[in-house]
Length: 290
Image 1 (tube, helix red, strand yellow):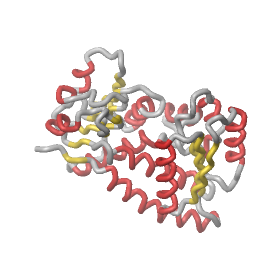
Image 2 (cartoon, one colour):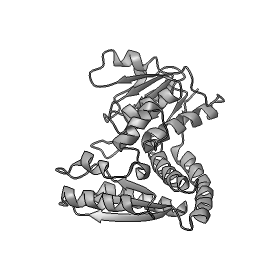
Image 3 (spheres, rainbow, N blue to C red):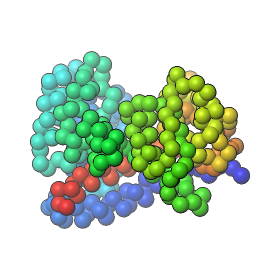
Image 4 (tube, helix red, strand yellow):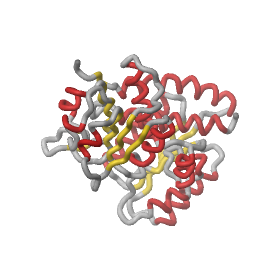
């Protein structure tokens, strides 16, 4: 039987519909809309499109977006000062620093200037540490979206959302996706394995996964021999080939031959990343009136 397509666009839309209602309740209690400040440094075209999309979706959910654009040659001091100012602004509920930053800027130093309770991207070291401890904190958007997509796939397949005991393999160990999604899978009581460029017997390890999350940034690295029969495959990668096509880290056609459910690229993880960012923003505003 062909694999089910895990439709990230449809799931993200349902999340946004629910967020609009939650946002309206928070707005009534706060006396203003939840506010998300997005800081974009430089003129990267892809980042500009992404920020515009976030702002558009935010408005639809009843969230007020504030787009702050800084030149690529901005100093670390000026960038960090801007982030401190937003952190101290009581009317700002969430802050997103669009990454990656232009070369030469101190990304880690900038993230440290974002107040953890407003770090709706979940990248502040304090929030990363709380995630490791299993404590309450904003969860990183892409990993959070991955978990929701896995649960959606389980529902579509007629299974419980409970992931307890399932064997989950994450390919990639970045602080943006690989490491946090592994911790979040552990929170769901999975047996989680993290693989990377130096892992031995990668295909064999992946082929034993009930849940396979690919986040390594290499086009179609994982194919038929890396997928277990009946697995759920979440492809975080997005790579542009020389012919202009966008593909993931997984060979989609081959994965569909064995997996029970697979996310497409594009249209899988990407829409959910934005939806989780907006969800975290409403959560941050809601915490002020809880």
